[in-house]
Amino acid sequence: MAEKAKKSGIEKLIEMQDIADKEPLSIEVTTECNSRCSHCFARAGLKEYSGLAAETAHQIMKEGFALGYRNLHITGGEPFLWPGLFELIGSALNTGYESIFCNTNGKLLTEKNCSRARAFGKSLTLSVSLQGYPKLHDAVRGSGSWEKTSKGIKTAVEAGLDLFVFTSAGKSLIKSLPRYTEFIFNEFKGIMGLTFIQMIRTAGDKPDLSDELLEPEDFMEMVRALSLLSLFGYPVDILENPLAAVVSHIMGMDWLPHTPPLHRPGKLVVLADKNVTLSHSSRESLGIYKEGRLKQFLEAAMRGKAVAPDSKICPNCRHIEKCRKFGMLNPSEWFRDRGKGAPFCMKTLDKCMRLIEKKYS
Ligand code: SF4
Image 1 (cartoon, rainbow, N blue to C red):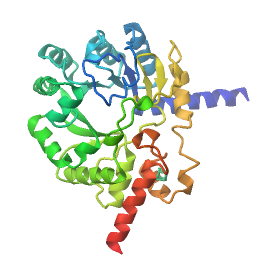
Image 2: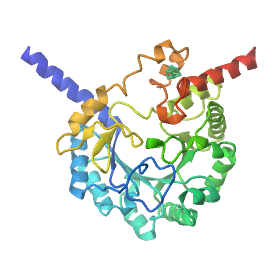
Image 3: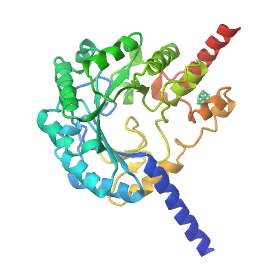
Image 4: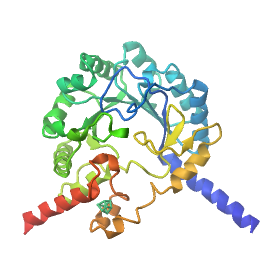
């Protein structure tokens, strides 16, 4: 009996390491930022910023490695404002992490910072967020922001850094996605790709972004445009959104890269205030990080309800087969639309099916 219990413990550990190996461990090192974006979920509702002590961030990174994590994601706020950033990246690579992904608003991608970052070679990848065209970007992030960020992107690419542009796709950008995509790849030659993020609501709905949330028709339009752009060789995708794969499949335009769901077993985020969550946009805490407790959070994250296939709504939904096939295991999260009636995924797939059925009837 004791032998059996021991074996099952080892099996559990191996399973945990296998899952962690494929997923990123995210550390939000600070919520301090030199932009004031109205849609920022990292800062929404915060009265003052928090930052992790360097020793805490290193401890989390090391515990993560021992649990099997090999991909480290560093985010903020603005990570380049956090004094220990380069030391943390260097130490993570020395520890054995294979890749580091760092989100930034690009304003601090100076020649000096890019040259320091270049020393990490291809192990470091950056993502820089742009809000849309210069006018929209400055309207959301403050006058002069586009110029600073644009300069940062160009400096980073010239320094040989791997860099993706991330753009939140709100209603006002949907109609011009192809033009915007062409604009970005012309303006920033040498970037690795352009990733769109479906606009979401922020904690407490402050500020109210309802007008920018996508309707099912907007989502379908986004998938159609990006599928075509993919077909023509543009490296575009939609971040952590398997609904896009289901929609593109129904439309017969299955060219868009498939991406995993936002919440999945093994993915873990330690926020700057030490709350541990399943995603950066989530305020549902699994608890507060303390030294030695990461394993406990990983176990909870692997077995929690949020990552298990839904057993209440999906089994009664006519789209379940298609959804499960493309990794859509749970209904869309509350923050993707106004949260009334059926979940966003069901409304979108109903519309999409009706459109296809009408076309071929
Ligand atoms: S509720 Fe959403 S995720 Fe679940 S089967 Fe229906 S459309 Fe798919």
